[in-house]
Amino acid sequence: MRASTTALLLLLFSPAAPVCAQAAEDSAAQWQRAVGLLQYLSSDYPAAVHSGDATELAEQRGLVADAQAALAALGPASRPFSPQLDAVAARIAQGTDPEGVARDCQALVDALVRAGGLQRSPRTSPDMAQGAQLYREGCAVCHGLDGSGDTPTAATLQPRPADLRAAARMDGYTPYRAYNVLSLGVEGTAMPEFPGLSEDERWALAFYALTLRQPACTHAPPKAPLEQLANATDGDLARAFGAAEVPCLRRVPPRQDEDQALAATLAGVDRARRLGSAGNFDAARQELLDTYLQSFEPVEPVLRGRHPALVQRVEESMLRARAYAEGRDSRFLSETAALHSLLEDAARTRHGAPETTTVFWLALLVVVREGFEVVIVIAALLAVLKKMGQLDQARLVHLGWASALLAGGLCFLFGRQLLAGVNRELMEGIAGLLASAMLVYAALWLNAKSNLRRYMGELRGRMQGALGRSSSFGLFAISFTALFRESFETAIFLEGLSIDSPKGALLGALVGLAVMLALVLLIRRVGYVLPMKPLFNVSTWVLYGTAVALLGQGLHAFQETGFLPLVPVRGPRLDLLGLYPDALTLLPQLALLLVPLALLWGRRGGDSPGPAALKPTGPGRA
Image (cartoon, rainbow, N blue to C red):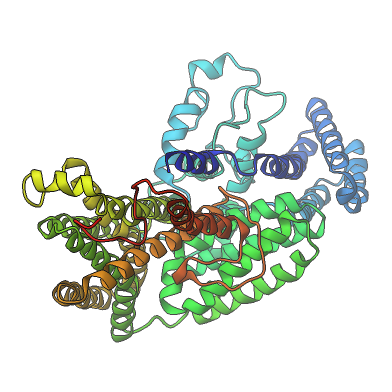
């Protein structure tokens, strides 16, 4: 088992698809460079024409030449836009039509963003505190803490760093343009690119940079879509909401809710579909993965509590689309169109939050559904202890599941912010694999020890009921890991339901917990008077079957995060049994199922005493 565990760890922590991810990043960077250059031209060329400065006009001609080169580097996909850019370059060469050039450059930006499937707004609301910290650490040395650019370092640079408070510089800026500056740098200046910053960090810094010239916010801002905030200048926001609202709109970005998350998911699916239409399947696959983890997954518990069947269809469609992208399959386009339709259904049915009574029953059903499997596992563990004559060790089993329940409560307190998206999926995957390993240990190792004559003799010579320190810890760990995954998942679902009705979610959870405790007590009492040999055999199979199911669920969670590739096959999907139509989950499950059969076959081929595996003879019997 140690060898197989090592192999599994190597599989899990080896890079899954770095090559295609790098190709997707390189393609997106090319489109982004062309967009960034056109953004410079749209805002800087009119000022250069009005100033009549020959040096500045020459700089604009160099920029449009760079934009033409960037567009040409994109190959056939960019050819439809070349005539428009050539017309812009001709006017810049003559130094004429500043307003028309700015307008046409912005139109080209919009067209290239759509064609390249670029993300022009953050997937989640930017962390302004993080943006402020990044600014202090990486930008203040040149631009100053206040954004004025009046620092000793700035005095040594030519040209001087921009004053981030000046109207002439910042009136034409949007967070999206600032994001591109951070991503690409500014050629001919000391402004570098920041490849070491993640996408979220660059967005946070970009949003923060536009707050430096704003006064303090004194009230809650009006509701505005994140897409609008990322692509609007301060003047655009003033015209849309009033000048008095601009400081708060810039300083207090909207909190992510279901409407915004579904809108971002729809936009991401559309970008992926455009990428696939252009033949860029690697970038399309990466876009779908990012969209699922960063936009849809954070609100999935809320949506699943209301419309579980619809959410499952969305997830299945998302996985199929990713698989088609990996296989460069033409069905990718029809699947993403179907996915778009499902997401629109989710957006329409999301309105009208459930009442307290509805939330109560949903929470109750979630707790009972997630806990029923655990009750069966606990009953099986207690049967193992009874067969071994070690009922006094039952307290370790109860301590294990009670501790896991407490851990689930702590997860609920942490909230969705820490347990969303990829964090949640990774935790579920790790917990599933650990629980699977521990249950295999329970079904094989403990069971085998209960059937060794020498071991039973040693037990009689030791203190009555003692299993030893290592086995005692094992019993606790088995019980804890068996429940923790379900407890963790339940906490996430309840967190989502509590948004609609905290009281209904709390009452439903408490009643569900009471039902599960009653079942544990009933099984504890009834289980002790049932026939032991059949009960023990059935319990052992339950433990092992649960391990197989958890193995599938754990591997599937890693696939959803992109840590493992997809290898789809035909077949049904049964989430409760951990069965998914994918070879990378089914083959390990099949291998795990064959282990006890191989052990039984090996025992038939020899007469030496060994583990009884899944068919015990009973304590004290030859």
